[in-house]
Image (cartoon, rainbow, N blue to C red; front, side, top):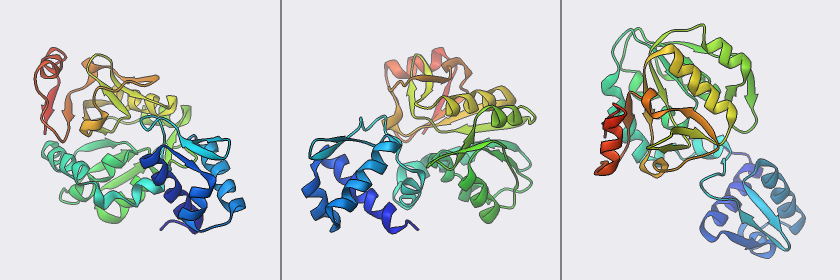
Length: 256
């Protein structure tokens, strides 16, 4: 459950997603708090990189690049039918007694309820909440990678987590992504996330990218997984034409 502060800040972010810009007066009316409180919220949100304060108001940073606080995302899991659809497709690749890497993305969180159907799974993750939910809702043996927790993201990355992941060997690795470009592959806005995906690819027999259609055709700063390193792409919409040809050229199997 979100705290009062988190709920208020989420209202502000959601308003900016729709309107792109808001005056402080607009936000005071929206959340029904004092000007001082709203300004403190804007300072906190700017530190997370979600917004940019301007004279008399605030604007949203590029929607594609913002990193919404993890708990804000998690509270809307039940509304993400497209991600659950992807998880249902991903389930068809899983068998009893497999060893699986599962990253900290919210798309992978949707896969957890499906994993409860299998016996003997061993799952390694860099997601704090992912590990908790796996322990609560599945019978899998769960290992969480060591390292530093990234603020506001409930994920573990960095050199310790990278090196820890290299001590495991897995049958499958399931990863989400910030963007997937049909020439450059999986890219991220955070170097640590890109590095963890590289480690999972290195130690898994097959790598599966779970990506909603809005993630396709976008490229960000840090290279994670090259196209030729992807075994499966699972998405929520059919891919046609030139994009299918590019996937075929990279020997990527597309499921939806």
